[in-house]
Image (cartoon, rainbow, N blue to C red; front, side, top):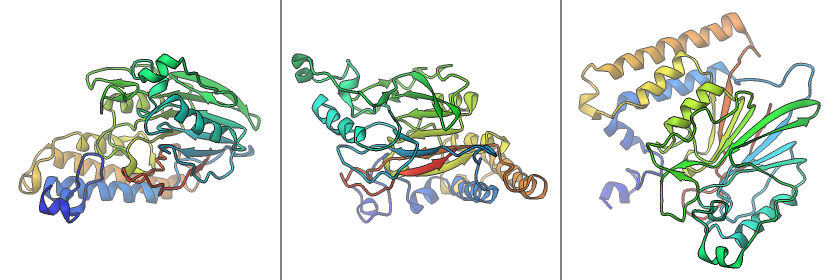
Length: 323
């Protein structure tokens, strides 16, 4: 570990957020463009609101509890986006499932995470295999590449969940696929309102470990709400509008970082930056001069990871979204 890392000026590993010094050394152009992009999203306001004349559906989002019991506010739907446990044994998972069952939410949706080894036969421990352990999922909706459609407050809501993540650890990690794999190709049904995955899409609340294939699938389906976790340090929520500003922003982030000096030399990243600026200003002006409040037709991405880094401490709160 270098001195700058030891004193906290550089991040220690890929699972942590970039520090200010990291940003300045790798690509100040990307850093400044990201700040503008976030400002434009803020000025555009909430990406959507509940349908007029119909009651809102409150979705409570959590993920990455890693054996912990966390405070969960009331709501109509509870979503747990995986990593219920650390070791992934059937016994540990069952304890988390029993806790979820005891919560009052009428609908409780669960997907597995890479630490929930029992759910994936390829990563299941020898002990669980020998004992023939089974899980009691009664009262929960467990989704593994499946769609469930529910009538909630007189509205039909389609929820699709899948645990697949890019390869990131040992064989004991569940539902991994190689970076060259295409597990998301046309996988999510187009009518999906709420998408639940364990891993994030590339470039959005992902500290760089998100999946580009999942991002393409999200662009295709455009779910109203996408809930995930996995990247503990990227906890939060982000509006997405699937427009030219977002397209230019994602294109910029997909380019190799050129460093502090080379960022000053004109290159294709400058074009991406200018497009983000142009489309960002245009979208904000259109929103407030032409559309007005409540005119947005976007989506929301939520990284609901409850665990703080790899400390074993719960620091984040459940994220509540009304759709």
